[in-house]
Length: 296
Image (cartoon, rainbow, N blue to C red):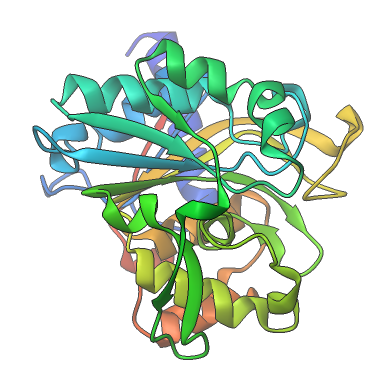
């Protein structure tokens, strides 16, 4: 074995030990989720989806696809408050390569969309890739039945419920109410902006929203991670570079892996504990077929 191969395998083994999962060398089944680290964001995104057998597993010809990044705050990519624009750009490209009819990109930010969209770099990246950037105008809202365990109705942007496929693209960062914000919390950007009314029961609300939207695929951007002072941040000292992307069908499992990246036990996060209880996904990583790759 060459030294380079030995080192790559050592890194890979270390990642597996960190997540306390066993590698699946004998069975050739599709993993869920996948994790790739140690490369630029676009490479990580493509590889993570390749490990899930490619974008065609999730997007079909003539689909209208809605990509939901986190564009909540007026922060540039280096501050890790919004999803990395290269991750979004790559997803738009992949969906169009799969034959999607339209690929839309949309969020309902905390800061004004007219500033968050360009400052984040996401608007320009998505448009260059051939995506259609949608702004959260109030006339797009519609009251719909959520029929959740806690949340019964909610004003939702119709673009999300009219799309053929939803792809959730959160960024991993800390949050004062939920400790971490990832895929489940990201759906707060698909509803009416008056979200303070949900803060007292935020764990219940985001579980119900996730069950309602049911994304076909979740891509967790953990390339640059805001490890303190989230979700807004604003200082480079708040950020650590993890150079990782997680992808999966099981949006609960993706968030569970995000928790592990930040050294949280998934069962200690209220929203993951409830999602697991309701059978929405798996938080016990020992029960999952996880594919990991360290691209050093």
